[in-house]
Length: 140
Image (cartoon, rainbow, N blue to C red; front, side, top):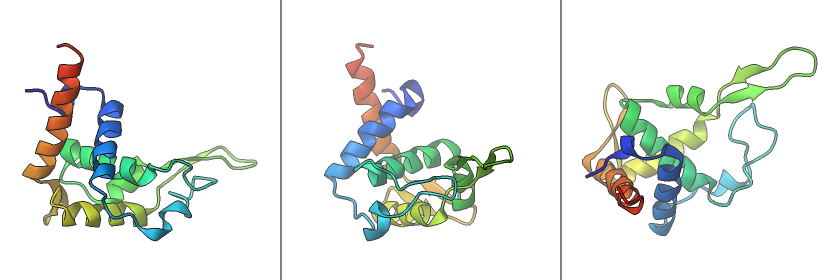
């Protein structure tokens, strides 16, 4: 049985996002209109941005948990280009990450502890099943 460390992370996140979209995770109303951080110029153009971000947060929690909003803000941040000075790193917005944590907690994929958020058995099983399907699909 394969786990998430044996498959390509970007492919795992795409497949998990598709499954989360099929489960109809509730999507905040503002998500189509806001930028994802101060370093971005425009809001995300992808229709599935919310589900991809939730899947990515699940994977990050699995790999690096316990983890909090602050670490993920740094993780999802980017470099902002200034007119005269050199580019500097800007952290991502915390509202989207916090709302994703809340939705994933309500669905039982993540739980909150003193140290931060950790993935639950249901969340591990969800990601490992997808990884196993991908591993079998490769012909391994």
